[in-house]
Amino acid sequence: MDGGIAKFLQKFQGGYTSYFNLRHQRAGSLFQGTFKSKLIKNENYFRKTFAYVNKNYDVHNIPKNKTQFVFASDTEYKNGNFDFVSETEGKDMLKVFGGKNELKKHCDEIVNLIRRERGKTGLEEFDELPSEGLKSSLKKNS
Image 1 (spheres, helix red, strand yellow):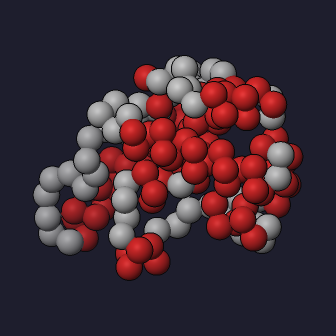
Image 2 (cartoon, rainbow, N blue to C red; image 1 turned 90 degrees about the horizontal axis):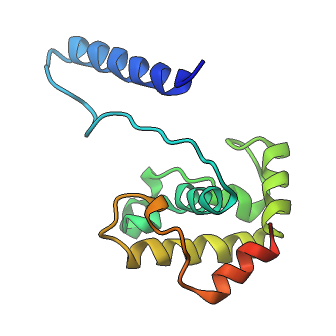
């Protein structure tokens, strides 16, 4: 079904908001903006999105004293102890990126790219990656 996950999450978010508001005797929205989703159609966009998700706390400058409130799967890829990410998926992704050091390097480069391009609203807006090293890294691991 087209948009199945997006529709499910939209309904889930709406239902949770209703429950939360009723339970806490309040009104209004809980989440900023509406739920959005976008199909990942190519390898380059996938790699940027993967890095963004894994290092989101760095993209948004979460202070070090608040990182205990952040869950990010990059620590699982770093130490190889997969809990949230399935072990099979984790090992497959490490192969795709050429190991944990290359994955970390890629994620850090993407975070730096996103932070430099901060005025843009989405990862897709920078189709061409400016760093030659990053371009060759993406091609090498494809």
